[in-house]
Length: 307
View 1 (tube, rainbow, N blue to C red):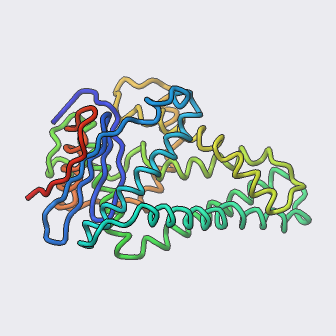
View 2 (cartoon, helix red, strand yellow):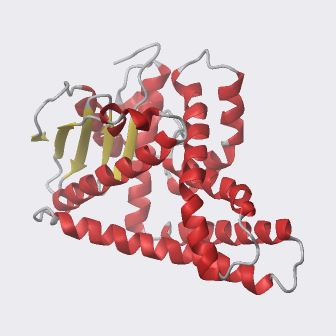
């Protein structure tokens, strides 16, 4: 499997496996307790194809983010059922977890920094400095969270599968044949990654949120930041998308390479959220990639074990 230039492939680590997304759908490969690889294929017409408005720059980033979260939750539920040998969770259970997670994220990354902003306002008269401090608090909470969860063994394995996803995609985009030995030699870091997107969003939010007035309460400031979040996410998506062209198009121009260097801190952060994978994890990621690339438009959902 090789190509001088390919269509971008997206991916996500799931429990004991990897999800890959191609032009026509998604392939999920999960290592079952018995040792075999279970594969699920699903054809998928992207929201951008269905709704032309989501092709507009800056708007498309918000749509892509919501769509990715929707698909990701379903595939996480599937992977959990395979990895544990239990029935797949009810749809509502995954969404309930998402709602709780969003609530915690708003509390940690929006409300608490806003409280710090309000509390420091009597002592720091410069609005730019206050916004910078608030942004650094938000960034500090994010880094502490990642470092904290990375100490759990289950999360370490998830980060290894995240690395396997990147190593296989890097191998594919290099033009080499995608095999386990070849993929093992590639880096688990990739410019087109959700970790980079999150960090770039946090950094951009420092600039965008500086336009929020300084006279708001912590609650009002939290709601103002939530209202501006689509703007920040849209900007971050375009920057990550532009940086990603450097891995799929060797003739990428100066704008793409400038975006690549601007998003480099996100790739540094991937040293926390990815780990080099072992051969068995690479095998799972390759199975996921092949399943995604094999899907034809409007193909039916299938599920099968791989010896």
